[in-house]
Length: 304
Image 1 (spheres, helix red, strand yellow):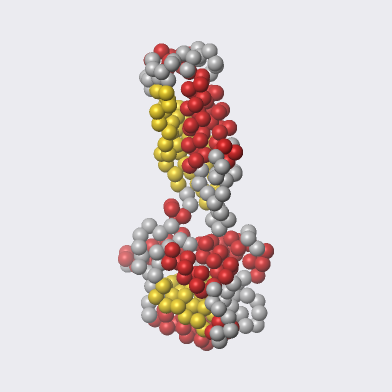
Image 2: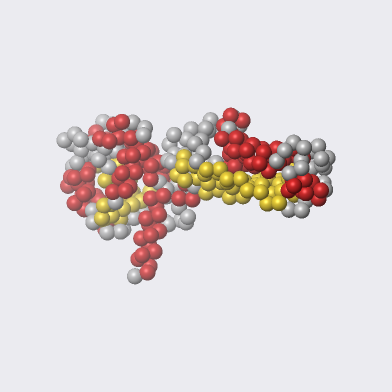
């Protein structure tokens, strides 16, 4: 199966449809009057759909087991057909469109099986996804914001050439995959004055987003939070909490990180861990949804 461990839980919804057509209007009368020899067609179809939704991962190899938190089955009864709509909801890392389509398909097959003794022309004409919502597609970037983005690596060992920078490079790679362009990449030692001077210069140059990696631990040399907190006008605790919560689900040491996020003027500062995994997971935790901040900011400024 596809690796989804890097994804975050979000509310995910899908609605799928299947249509069962009849060869005679007498078939619908039998359904409504509950005279079909095999029993109550609609109720049996509803139960079959519920079982199908919950057992999708057992039937389709690449589907993940998902905690289904809602399934709704609706029937629209027409003169010569029944339109089945299956709605599925979960709060999880991956979507439920296959679950909804599986439920609709099995509901349709159940109708077919129960009606074929009285209607030799019954057929399943359509199974399709009507709607889905949730995940990065809905919470991500809706437009190209043309952001001025800088990445700063705060590390004595990297700045002296004794260690290769991997954290900064993985941040750049992930941001570029989101369509962002990195205008500045800087490596500097773990020194408060140096960090502050570089941040101030980038802010003066109208950087929209500055991501610092390294120096968020608890050693005497880890001074990145102490360096940028005095520069921040508005901290955003929710983003900090999201980063640590996401990391804590993957390693118990994430609680030791001191990631800091906030605005200096109109520039968003993000101090992230210096380990490669910590940096990568921090980006996965809050991007691309964090970019919504810039849509809000530009909207507010435009309205002034």
